[in-house]
Image 1: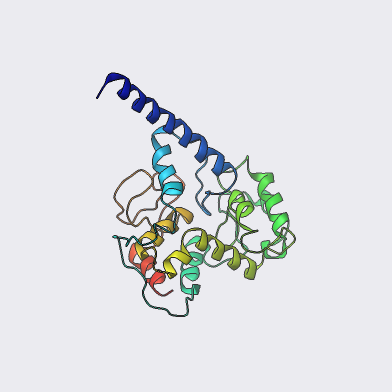
Image 2: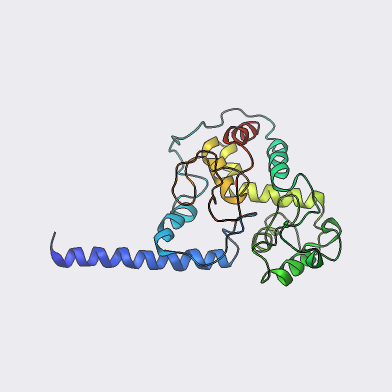
Length: 247
């Protein structure tokens, strides 16, 4: 290959890395890819940008139509599509099923002025924003939803900031997050149980990675965010897959 061709290829790769960094940062800033419970904050490292870009953009949670996934099993049954067993599993390990809980690292004096289920979504967002600079996480409710996630998902759940952050609406928000991570595609047989469960591990840090964690290590039961000093898996890979297969 001619030297000038090699130079053009190299320049394209470098440009792609820079573009991927900017794209991931911009979309995370808009709350589009912020996970519900991960406490990870900060900038995007160039060496992670292309992998993260591929995770979020080049490989959409729906997969490629007509291409049979190779990891795990495609759902072929056409049951009720009940997601409650999966929601119950997530609630159990994120909050022990407590719809009024906040992240344990938040000091009592900085807790919400009222119990979360009696507050509107707008009031919860305002409270989260007020403590954002002080803590690594402002996770709230049964599904430990972060501010950026809540701000980016409530409309997709068919809610407004005037709606209460109560049990029913927290469940609606969680279902919207399941759909963002591939629920409909799993139901339709477009992605496998393993792919869907891997997507969920990026949304809820208490769920284990199924294939690889964020650092590229083989999944052996650790959180997708293992090693960040804040998050860890609290349930087995098989338990998550069993809940997914009940859908």
